[in-house]
Amino acid sequence: MTYRIGVDAGGTKISAGLVAGNKLIRKIKIPTEQGKGRNQVIKNILKAISIVSRGIEKKEIGMIGIGLAGPVDSKNGILKVAPNIKGMQNLPVRKIVEKTSGIKTIVENDAKCVALAESRQFKCKNLIALTLGTGVGGGIIIDGKIYHGSNYAGELGHIVIDYRGYKCNCGNNGCLEEYCSGRGVERLAKKYFGKAIPPLEVQRMAEAGNKKAIQVYNEFGTYLGIGLADYVNIFNPEIIVIGGGIGRAWKLFLPNAIKEMKKRAFDVSSSTVKVVPSKLEVDEAGILGVASLD
Ligand SMILES: [Zn+2]
Image 1 (cartoon, protein in one colour):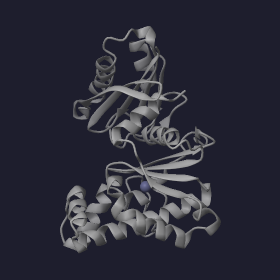
Image 2 (spheres, protein in one colour):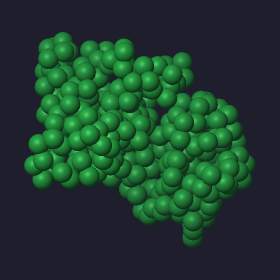
Image 3 (cartoon, helix red, strand yellow):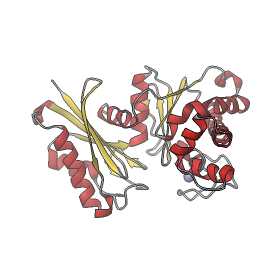
């Protein structure tokens, strides 16, 4: 039996899973502890790997895949910009893990890994996956493979939907990420309720029929639809999958997003694309994707 290990290292937690074939055998979650510095984060990544592979012989493990948020130089296994884990940029993560574990290691952007997992889940080779969470991550799958461009392609959260819009962490203005993320929901809640409300609470209110909360998600959907229209025009994907923690509220915003997308995109492409919610658990998608890299 050959196993693979998938690690999804985020700003607050590190999820790791033991994968055989396409199946997640076991998974664990430990804190990232980024406040203790990057050495501690690396230690915790190694700890997660050792916990999840307990009882398995090293020779039975084919590879370790590590997914990180931010632009990753996957050829060299280095996170180039670390928006969510402070101090991790330019750290040779692959080299360190490979040297310590003695197992072949691949490092990739987390959202690209999710896209790969979705591509397998939906058995679809031309697909776009959007992860709506703290930020907006994205991955483009073309002919069954992650599209990298020269290296860092697929920053789908950073397309501009309002050129005079909110300042984004990336330095640009009006990126989709500022509208269709957790803070996007909070901002809209402020607009409709006059105060910031956590996204999950707004979701519950909307599901219970609160009119203002429903308006929050309608407007959220409009913004998302503007972005979707661009992806559809550029990539003409068969499927766009919406995942991530904020994406769980898809019933509230997806109808409006699809309406807006159809209004804006070329009909030849928008009439065939399927925009669907992810069927995978949020952390499962990352683990399965990163463990299927080669
Ligand atoms: Zn941006």
